[in-house]
Length: 166
Image 1 (tube, rainbow, N blue to C red):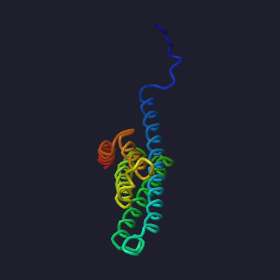
Image 2: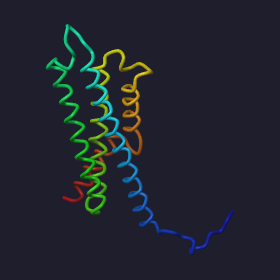
Image 3: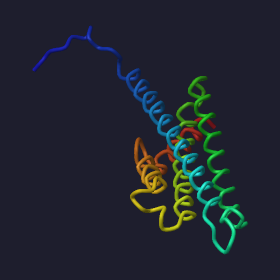
Image 4: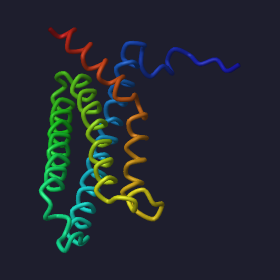
């Protein structure tokens, strides 16, 4: 039952919507940066594990198929970092900000699940134990995908904004 006068209004409807979308984009960028940190952590843990775990008389890191998996994890992480940098540049320039942020969220959410999932696979059974961090990073990636719009939402948002610009 409190009356608030028009003088107390901070933003009108269109400006408030733009401010909320900018805040959403900034929060999504923070999540994306955290995801890349998790991917890098999983890659480092996995590389160390493969170097120290011996099977058939040699470290697992010497097996070519496992080297290929690590290379795929590296490519996904590096591509995610590039998408994040592009989104940050778009935010700083104000040009196609929402599209770049949503594209980055979609790519990074997908890549994070892949990298952390591969980390679990390469660690074997220990990767899913409660004491080992790789499984925690995977859970964080699942959570990240659902926060502030899942990958499907951001793919749709990005494509709609792209079509609107075309």
